[in-house]
Figure 1 (cartoon, rainbow, N blue to C red):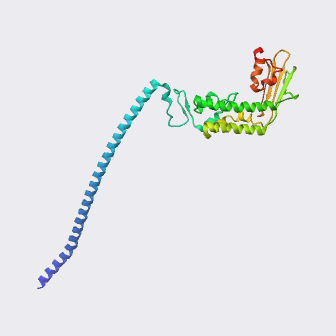
Figure 2 (figure 1 turned 135 degrees about the vertical axis):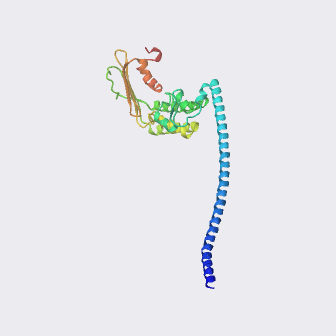
Figure 3 (figure 1 turned 120 degrees about the vertical axis):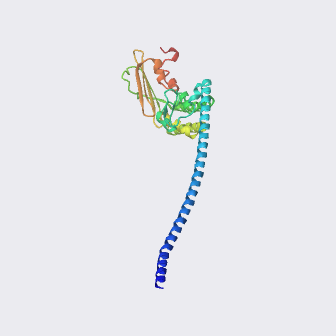
Length: 290
């Protein structure tokens, strides 16, 4: 009896040790099965991702091939157009501005850079210069329509100035002023000048739009200021004993220019055309000029 009890105790002790080990083994097997299932799931997802990546690569290769074909077609078209019209190769803007291409007859710059160049915008008669019209992309019909309005407005304003012009005894200085002198003064006409500048601005906006009109007025600021009528304009012409002339002009913008010892032909070119009749008593007619 004692021996049976002892054996039973040993069996129970062994069973107590075996059962936890068995459960642990089962848990390990269960965790392994879960890991294998998770691994199979990840492998399936990886295979799907690789298939998607492969499709994307094929699509990219197809797009790159199509892009290369399109670029080749564009290049061939540009080469063909360049043979028919050499200027067409410079029609497309560069990737960034400003751009200088030594082979190109043009330079690309931003629009806001143009006012800093201050090119000559207007001719003496008020018409727009061909260079300015080209920069503003004006074709010949549009330029002619604009010029007609500008020239008429300036001619009317000059006529008003001439009607108010006066001869003066206060001549501008001439180092060789030892002969007859004629001095003409156009008084300040601020109201008329302001109305004229408003008219010019209206003509520009109607024909060019606000943006291009702004570019023109900025580039021609000095020219327009000289027509503002805020200050008088004074012109003196002197005939020297040696047969030459002297001309001194103080413009309405405050600047002063003078030349002495010049022939009458050159003296006449210094004077605005609309003022020439006022100096007919001292300057010979153009046909008689030396």
